[in-house]
Every structure is written in structure tokens, then in C-alpha cells.
Length: 232
Image (cartoon, rainbow, N blue to C red; front, side):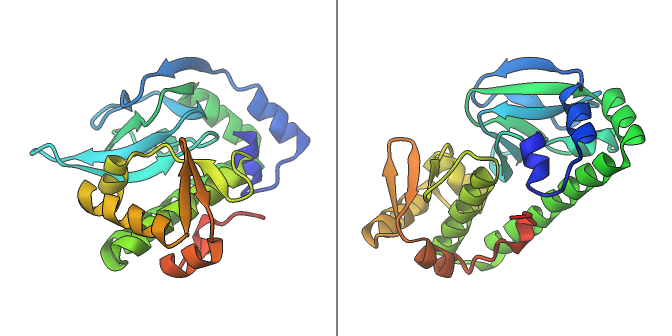
């Protein structure tokens, strides 16, 4: 959490210590297990320590739209501190470890440290910025561009918290989950991934994504990382 916030804001030693001292309850979550559900009224926020999580909506016919992906350091449901009822679901994408932080502890923290209030507010605003970019991605880019954009985002988010380097990172989402994130069929995703590999833009080594031509991937996605608002 400290590393994540320091990628978007400057923290003082006292603020880092205050974050380190937050009371937490650790819990292991199975892959695809819901962490919090639509309609819930949570009294705590979830900090992702290990693994991946995703926000999603489910339609009555069972169709799923993945709205965002989260990596270690993220607090995917920070908005529940001020919005009483969850309007979406949050689930683990992979086996994950989460830390639940009571709302009361976070309210006390923000009352004592205005700088942390600003950092957490900035984090929620960046989450909204990412949502706008996802909307543009689904609505206006080609399928090749959508997947390239998603890969660029995942790499930079992992790199910001020290979990990716040299254009190589874990790629936890399956083809089906990529399809649900960008609004196309699983078959279409499979074809596009084959194209990206054949054209030398990416490769898969086990569960890792290797970006072989970052420049070409960026051009294909028309990718501008400004919406992530990273300090570096």
C-alpha cells in the first residue's frame, strides 16, 4: 500500500508509519471468490496484498462485464468508505491475500493526516480516470488496440509497485477474462493474441507476458499513460 501510494504521491515518514500501524485482518481468498458483493454494506476496505482482483457487473442472463483489474497495493473498494451500498461486485482473479481495514480506522487516519487524505483521494480519482480510459477502449478501439492497451496498462501498473521489469510481467487474466474486460468473444481474443505473437509484439513464457516490441504495442493501442497519473 505504501509503495502504491508513493507511486502517485509523496509521503512523509510519519505518514508511512501511520499506514504501517493500521489495524488489519488478513484473509486468504480463493480464485473467483467474491470479496464483496453488489448490495453489501461493508464496514471495512480491502487492501490487496498478493494476487489479482477484479471489479465486475453481472447481468440477469449471466453475462459478465469486467470493469477493472487490481494488483497488489490497490484498495479496490476504497469508495465504500463514503458510499454505503456496493453497486458492483469485487472478486479475486487468482488465489489472493487481502487485508481488511476497518472504515473507522481509515476515517481516524484521514482526520489525523491531511496528506494521506489527499493521497487516498488522489487514488480514487485515478481509479475514475482509469474507468474513463476503459470506456474509451471498449467503445472506440479495435480489438487489437483494446488488448494492446490492456497489456500496456497492466505492465505499467505492475512496474509502478516493483512487480514488473524489462518488459516482462505476470499475466493472470485468462483469454475468457480478457474477453469479458474488453467486450468481445473468447474466440476473437484468441485470434488477436495469435496475431500479436506472430507479428513479434508479445510472447508468453508460462504465466508471464513478455512485451517484445513496446513501441509497436504502444502505437497499436494509441497508448498514453497520462491517465495513470504516475509520479515516475
